Length: 519
Image 1 (cartoon, rainbow, N blue to C red):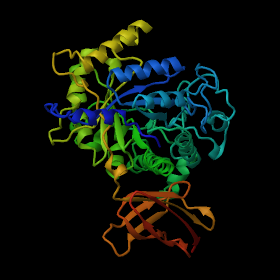
Image 2 (image 1 turned 180 degrees about the vertical axis):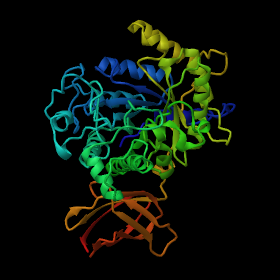
Image 3 (image 1 turned 45 degrees about the horizontal axis):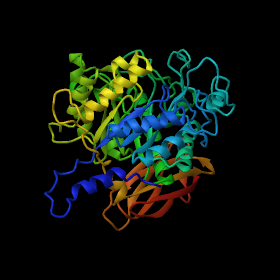
């Protein structure tokens, strides 16, 4: 994959003084400087908009764009499993993703394809493409072919909003294949997942009402031995649903790695309300309890390269200042050797308040941990004033933000982005010391769902690891020490050839298939 090197090259030149000249100040440290570019506003609808976007990002000394190409199982592109969007983009052969990749890379800016993972549709009329997942697997589908998530009260649509069930194996595999098609066909630097969680519209702030599909309940019953319909706050049910989202993230991570090991996998993590400091710990915070998104565990496991957290808080509301600062600290402390980026809401603040939040983003936490960067939401609406303004007002507010970041800090301090900066290196990708393992399990030729797989090192110091197969019989483990391992299906009902020996090498994904027989 072509990597964007212009910013790094500029830093290298700046760091080497000319012969006989006095040494210049140290180059700006590497940091992510990004904008989310949503697809509900102008930005990538035609080539001229893309040119303006890239020029603005360059003026801001930004080095990364999270560009929304997948809103609701569609694509702002021409060559993916997801059908081309119905949005009013320039007619084919114009390809928004191809255009932004070409122009941004020419300017030394990375492009990460932003994809909503579980939002299926939200219009009164269905999508035009007969192949769209809503038309094939929405309200007209039955059984396992019906991918719609369902709330405890039976609702599947909230207004026109429809979501997939992350516990439906076919829906999960479609998302993984759709993302894979984008990586295979476009020179993206990363894939960025939004709505990778259970939906909102719940009966309380610390419970989730979703997941009551026939498929999910049948799988839950098979795993637990229960036969009841669990309450929304049932701990076992909540943990099982949370595990379904984590399994999706894991499968996306290893699928992306298999397609292109250089592609960075990021998530737009939720930061609802206060940080975990106010709730007695992570498990009390709303991302974990309310939308079943255990992103701290994803970071710790290593199935996310970059956490681009949506820290959307109003700087002019004192309680939300506390929320912002608590989450900023938690983000810095929950990196576990990966990277996290603070993502403030430009659209909720004026420019001065956004600069204040950006400045605190780069202050180390009390534990001494520093975030990897900043990403503003959004490019289209760079301030609260811009949200209700004309195109001219939006442009003026964007220019004011760019100036405040690069040349004219509101408080007279040294501007945060006065000089270009390189994107931080990800050493676990560029100089890996561990490898990954993925596999499938069948029993008598059928998919083995929710079967435990144990991976034991043979003759080296690696640790014993366990994995659970998903609804397609797939399992995956990341960051294994190089060496030989025994991979064994541990299930009392399984006999026959249930062992495999594999060799894991650093920087590679080893795949294994186990075809066992029932006992």
